[in-house]
Image (cartoon, rainbow over all chains, first blue to last red):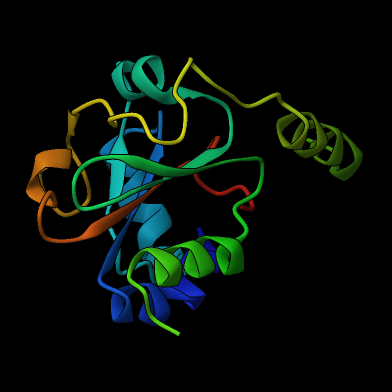
Length: 93
Length: 64
């Protein structure tokens, strides 16, 4: 999540909202956010509902404004790849 | 815990297989709602407004 925070201005500049999700509860999320200085929300999926809908393990989805999945990236997030796809979708150089 | 044990635990997390449940590029993202550090968040909050980068990770206080 640190890497997303480091690149947060780039994501925000492209009008993209970063959301982190794990099964941890909100108390843990608040401490983790404070420790890393995260300015984007961390969602608590402690009932496993989101994981049930989307998938398990470390995986990142890019969803466009119409709610369509544009990128599925298993493993550690690769921000440059995500940003490149957003620029392509937004038709920005 | 001894540092070596921690290293093994972290490695185990790093190699957990990730898997999307039948979702594919070009499909509609399933709607969701969940509590967050910035209040309740729904996918529909962003539709028509912003792209969403939805990043699933394993645990707080681990890298990535």
